[in-house]
Image (cartoon, rainbow, N blue to C red; front, side):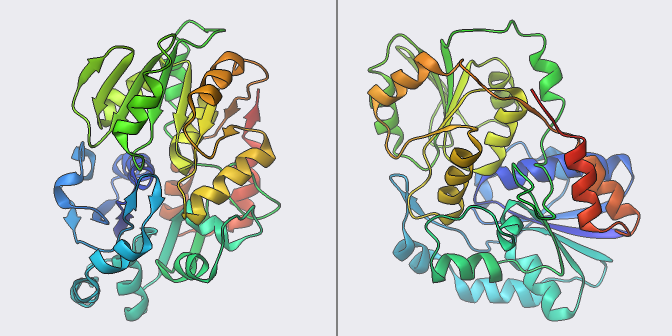
Length: 350
């Protein structure tokens, strides 16, 4: 079997999921070619696991100061190049197309009558899950951006639907066991890539009682008082994640999933104008899995740091990536409903 796996590169969550699936495809000796789109080619980092991957420009969303800028998004995407990439993508060698909300591979396969399996958080939005800030544009994007014949949606709860648990690196929890449990918050990991990084630093610098390790593609490694600034790095970020006491982040899906698996307290600020993040924040509030704020406010952050160790939840997730790869290799004979039931039965809450 030969597979083309398209990965949307706008956020790092899609790439993190692909890393886990790539690991198990390699173990099974499945021939997989990876296609990445959605950001500048030089914006990808630590990509060795994907071998000689393919790149196309694709489509992306542009943000300013924590908000999606729809006008800039409309103007800056190259739609002629997008269509050219779709029609010129050679799918002849492939038996199966997998897409994680990646539109070039999804639409190329659809137009050629090839089977497409969609795996990702966005595919959960086809079910009855908590929704916020939905409008015609956002609903249309989720439905038509990267269509699939078979959709595997991922979320933090089943929501009485055939949804699977998140795909994460389950070995993280084993690494964290070597760390001493901390009943107070001192070190906080911060990942707010769509916010103004100068403003983030300005806010957090007013809280010298805590050490904030801030990651962003726009930063270079250095320290300023109580702020440790780090350029985006997969390995360094995972190392800091298993050592931290708490996490401040946007309401993207993948990092919060890892935090829940590790039992880390979460303070989250959803990206403005972004339906997925607004809906994620709503789901987190309904499930009581995180504290949600609308703005970065030092008083709210300090208040949260003082009380986050109380009643914190940990969700031990199964190895969903290994299960899905086995399912693909067995020609996906098992139904999505059965997969969902089995994997949620393997999920434990502490």
